[in-house]
Image 1 (tube, each protein chain N blue to C red):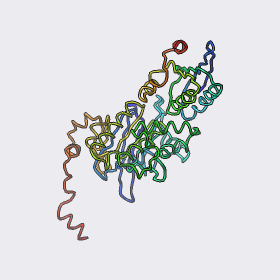
Image 2: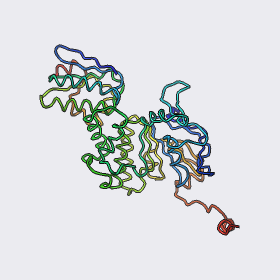
Image 3: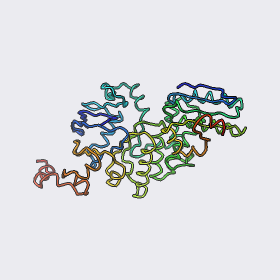
Image 4: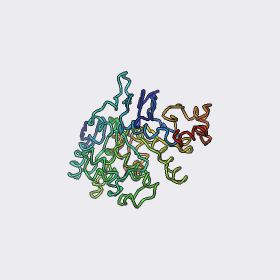
Length: 109
Length: 269
């Protein structure tokens, strides 16, 4: 797994690619916690290049959102492949996270 | 058929008694395969071989990754301990008695494989544990100990632990054993739900007729260490094999020996 951080007009877009699993998710967590420590107001996670995500990946997003809530930060998830969307739907997390079809939509939303 | 596991010539003994007699079959990928048969037919012994707990006297068990290569597959009967541990990380097992550790809370039971096999930090493990307990309908029971749970709840907790590492292969040994019909039906519903949601290859050992017809895509029927039927659930229903019919119609087995043979056995003559 590789994680790219992109500044899109002042909004931080985190774009992981490949498989987010029990062995690679700690790296994604490290990147997110660095942003959260700086109290980044909005983080958009773009998942279009993610081929697989397991429970530890979902748990990483849950922990990030929980840590952003006290300072009213926003965690938005965009460009979710269908197979990954099924996992969000099943766990009802699609109702908890702000989900967007595209990064542009997430920036506007 | 795209097989997740290919078994060839699997032969096993307990002492001098041959309990699996050269079994050859495939477990189809992403389907629910049910291994059925009467008590003592070799179902659980077969399962123990498939998960690498027992080594066969003869035969191979190839676990395939799903690629198209002819050489795809690793024979677990030939694996050393380190390779076997790697293989076991990709599978989950619900044992017949759930096999929870009584000295640990449910949360710690579910967390155990994550602590043993990953470098995940505690906050992530805590979230995964809550996710898995919720998955099996045990939200809020993380602090309970196995002794405080009913049989059905223990089985659910066992499934949560089996799912902890997000396995590709999930094995269930008699999931409904010892449960009332309503609880057993609930467990079947859970198995169906897990199968629909996650990309899983399921192998369920059972002798419960209701479960077979509810959860199975594919059926392997054993009798005295031999495969007497292998095919889809529709093919099972249409099978003319008298032993299959007897099992499905819950007919008692015929007397194994004639009265004079029985006399010879018990008189020692």
